[in-house]
Length: 285
Ligand code: SAM
Image 1 (cartoon, rainbow, N blue to C red):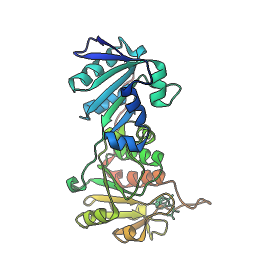
Image 2: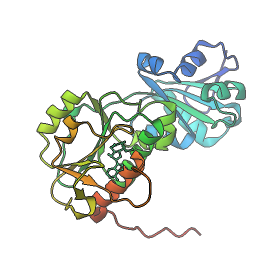
Image 3: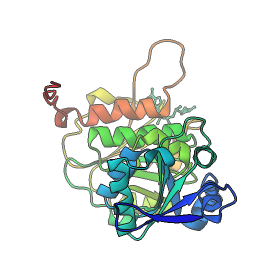
């Protein structure tokens, strides 16, 4: 392993061997067991890494491809990583392919410390929208929900029960960077229900047997907690019974139900309808 100085006030370690222990640790982040052990996760892409740093996430390791050497943006991120006490690795294409398990990997990968919001720290004010996901299983669904929560300006996501990992590579990819902007809390059903008891706003569940058309509800008063059910089983009785309203999205055709992330998106845009305005598009020239 060679060390050299960059324009950044720190050092870059050059790594070409897959047997390097630092690389082994990063590769292990593909497995939840090791993500939990290291309390870390991986995000791919220069823009994501910059966004994460801007939003105050703690970077542990920055990995970049040899092709990034001399790239001003990469050098700047490398300097920020060193300033934050992180390690910077310049690696071969082979190493980057192995870390990301992709044939055409991004030029930059960041390893960050995981962060969960504690339920007790959630403050729900008027106009705030939170989404509770019951036992969400699919990383693509979870990532898409986090991205949509970000897009509509909702406040965050609460994972209830045994769910897929918000910090898995698949989920992080599906969030397209929103993992760094959207607070995520987690709780077992019991703790969630205790917290829900103190929630002062409207608790709107969605259910295939819901009696109320989601378009008929006034969401403008107070905070809203939107509760979405598991992909296979929907909301269990204990959670459904804790909702103020059980809402249904009318459907035509033969499909039994909507995909969880699609249903969440429809609900969120309806709940946030009054708050969302089209901004003029900046002149491209
Ligand atoms: N077989 C499941 C069931 O019986 O509920 C289907 C679950 S659906 C794939 C996943 C979640 O998306 C549901 O629990 C509900 O929260 C939401 N959802 C999907 N389609 C919906 C609809 N038409 N109306 C209300 N919620 C819906």
